[in-house]
Image 1 (cartoon, chains in turn orange, blue):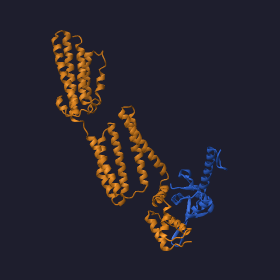
Image 2 (cartoon, rainbow over the protein chains, first blue to last red):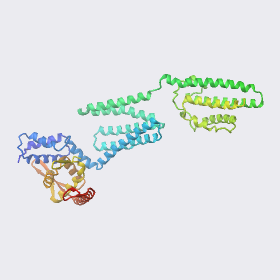
Image 3 (cartoon, chains in turn green, red):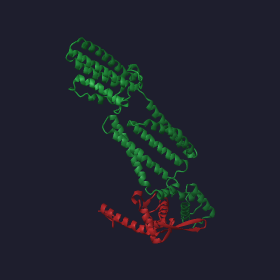
Image 4 (cartoon, chains in turn yellow, brown):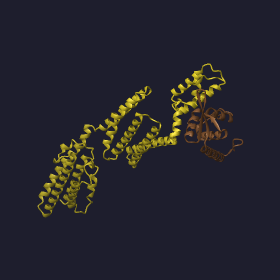
Length: 378
Length: 125
């Protein structure tokens, strides 16, 4: 039987400690086990250190530290493996549902909103918090614990900002800016300082930071993307034509109504004038809400607005002055159609969710149709 | 888990015996009063004629966890500069051992029926 000296015990103990075993009980157990293996070795031992290393290697797969990590997990986190499995499943499900939701969105299939909502909620409310708790149980020290908490909050905040944005809920941009600027200005510097303390982590940390900054940069580039100038101009050119022909049509119609001095002609002239007044008033009202000023309707001023902004942003059911303007417009239409024809309430419904440039053309078309109705008898 | 079981030259997946390590430890310690880590691995090896070899990477974390759960008690013995830790089963551990062995026996019986195995000849009927 091989006799192990006191110096060799010290050497082995130091090596075991150096390889990541800090728990005294585990260290003693491993040391005793290796000693037993060496003492009971059937082969002669010429190189003690080599023999010790070869026995110790049989204890682990990657490094000796994994024994302590495993012991720690078994003691502190009984359901660690189930939680880890659940975390991975929720992550895969969340990302998968989100991806399917996006395919649905591209294809304009129904159910898009619920899929995207479910995907983002799974990622932000299940996957990220579980990842946080699992990482927390792996015993991060000092700053790492703060970094982990901050990273989790920023990630959840980013998920919510995306959700709020696609759902058109308020504070989406604020949340997005907080999470992106929080990541770049607070998280990244602390992460870099923390990672550069350990030589092994430097390259990985740099790569992670480059990826984060690049992703944030690309995200903001995407958000800042506008339509090309000619494409942006196009809706206004169409509106310009529409507006011109509408005004010409109204001028000719006015002449026709004016030439009829009968009672019926006078009544139609009055109805025409009222409709014209209410249409222009409604256009004026919408214009003022869009450009946020008290100026009267001018196409040139409207050209500076983004044609893709939705009118829903200025038309709200709770807005009493908007309801009044629409009601007056409807009354003018009702007088012409005599409440018999199609219910003009559709106008109110269709005005919601239209593009800025289209809403004025729709109003012109509704007006034109009503004038044609008046001209029927002529 | 780094449970590795070698039966002759065949290496079985850790999934197959996942959860039986505690049963093995509890049963051995109930029979042998007190044992230390190396002794446990050697006893398992001898009893199974080398067909089951417990790895240290699985054994020590499990022993550590069982001690912290109160299933095992420990006492130390100094051999020169090194410390040997002896494990024995606590009262709670003894009750758990019975529970675990019964559960495993029932599981084996269920598997025998399920897979239609004749355990005497180990042939699929």
